Image 1 (tube, rainbow over the protein chains, first blue to last red):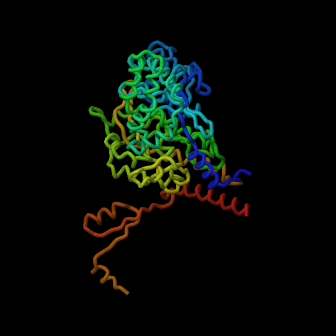
Image 2: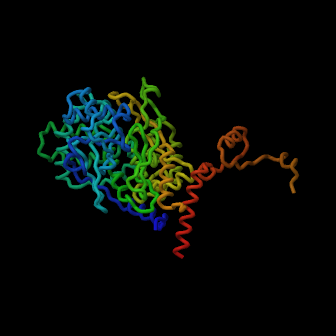
Image 3: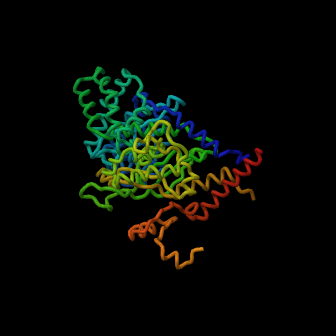
Length: 420
Length: 67
């Protein structure tokens, strides 16, 4: 029988799986070898599915850069021509067990983190963070961007992979829990997380057999980039939420992501179906010299952190972040408190000191979002709307309600059909 | 029973339900006010409310059939 399901029990099961998940860093591999379904002519991207003709400026820029980096075209014009042809296959990272920040573009040669949920065995993937400034994830594709990606492929990835082999797996859930105690929310503030990771990996990097100059550059690269840990917190969040896919009858949201044009969500009980609406404009602080006209709509898979109860959902743990995304410290507390209204549980692992160590709001419940008319809160970087320029600021944004309305409608059709 | 005129001759104490700006205006005038967060179910969206009711009803039917 179609509606033979107890939603409350299904959600309890989904939450139990999310809480029990134990993401660890298993290693670093090459996307071609480790990402399920990856192919030479495939480009993975952030957000729900999208075609070249509907892509925003920064997404197009990142695709152009990815094609040049992968050696599929030599310059911008030929890369654009190839991207518009059927010879390139575009696919969301989320449909290949992974996530990508901002444009999230990944190609077959790129090194990727391999994250494993030790409790349930599922694996997730993410590229390594490139740093700030002119970077592929914000749509830049100049020679310096491509050169850095090649260095990451030839040196950074192999050095960290070798260090992890010497060091053994690293418990990511524990690092995230500690980072929250130290003022991060592991979406737009990753200073503590990056430092904690550095402490874990640095001695093993020194012990690898690579040239001293290469090891030094790798150590400098990690420690000079406060966002290095973002590409670990994201696949960790994905690994936890993936554990709840696809629990029949559950209304827990397992994916929130954006491709710069559309915002998409997926719900545990509705399996792989995407529910989309227009990506919204981000309100926040812009870097000097930029105005609202320069901003691209909301972009990236990094909202997976919020989906897992981190990011803006844990902003009360990171009041200093308001200097980056705008607002006030009291607003950070208000946001976290509001998110408890639409979530099903409090994290057993991630605690917020300023709220008397209350567990972070975990497990967005589609029914609560719709009933209480409260949208999930996300904090995020803002990309320039034209390809190749990069980040112009950071701020706060919500998903469009249309995603939740469409998902609710589908849930009612699936689990509460009206018989004629 | 307090007469209406007596009510307005006493200091006013207000419980504001719903729109926060009403409470803010009173606070600015020095009136003691307690604000209660409230919004209509589904934000007053009839389509959403009907879908939620449909799902809730199906759950009631499910629980009843299970005894």
